[in-house]
Length: 213
Image (cartoon, rainbow, N blue to C red; front, side, top):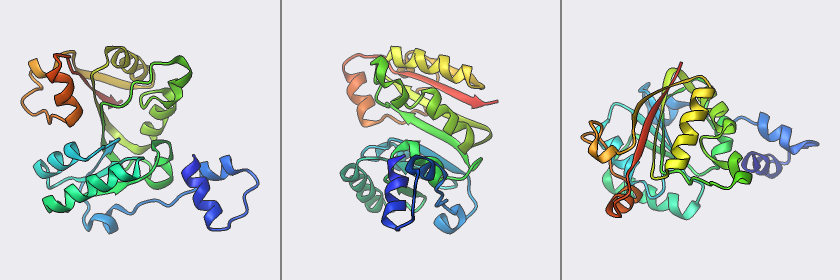
């Protein structure tokens, strides 16, 4: 959790064990202070240029959205798009996903969106996958009881891996489709930039909903 460790160093706090200090660091967001209301909060991890988060926020003004993106130049583009659209129910976090517990309180999120996360098929990179046990443990902490994770991907291998891991970690798997654009879930689907690219190549889009039991 390098981000939290960097903050601790910058503030001059003595840390004999940076890893432990980083894991215990907290600068939790006050949703009411941030958004000015008590509306439900949804979270997108890996928002990219912000096309998905802009459209879903436009469709759901009664929901507050947090968008996470680790690349600073990318998140700036997303922020500019939101400003141009005049949307007031979106806020951004320019942080690595593994540091989410440093900033988001437990049982405060209703839905998490994982749109076309990098599959990272190499065995040695499993911990970095956003549906690995490492991250599912984080999602369980952040989600309210009955909260959901909605995943879309173009990788069948990654999709099958995700189905297995979510089920192993106490989530109920539902709304599974291996061809989203020709399914009953297509009507309300928000097509992301990557999604349009993959679908344009004739690739099927995989989607599932995971409910925290």
